[in-house]
Amino acid sequence: MNGSRLKRLSASPEANVLLFSFLVNFVWEMWQVPFYESLSRMDHMNAVRICTQASIGDGVISLLAFWSAAAVVGSRLWFQSLTPTPVLMFWAVGIGITIVMEWLATGPLDRWQYAANMPRLPILGTGLLPLLQWILLPAVILLFVRRQVRGADVSVH
Image 1: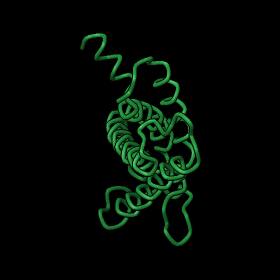
Image 2: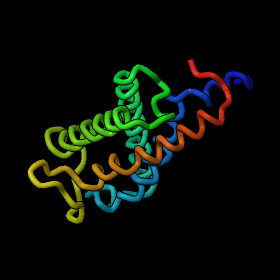
Image 3: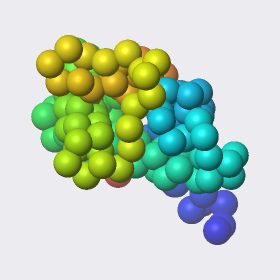
Image 4: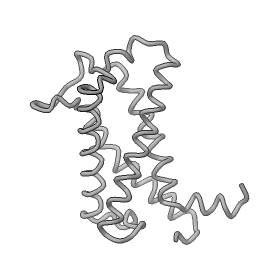
């Protein structure tokens, strides 16, 4: 990859959302391993593989939430001013997808189960940690993206 292509990629909001979302969420996913039934019992490399897959999924959720916010305000650069409407859209889409995915994965699809120490929301039964993940981490992700895209010194189309 040549230098100008790399600069354009580093200025792309979408590439940065994916990158920073993956990195920040990977740390969170590894931290919450003890709160999932099978993850705390499996060998380290399998747990890392599963957390990597989950972090890629988190990146996709972040990208969908990013595009939803961009659609609402009509700009891919909405994160530069961080006004309430796109930020709330970003959070709402991420939280909504997370609740649905957790419900499906722990219910009908039976992909994973929470450990006894996972705090859960009443009625829905959604784990509190996956929900907190989408309440706390988007702010960090958006700040990283904002800083990276500003520092890239390339116009974003």
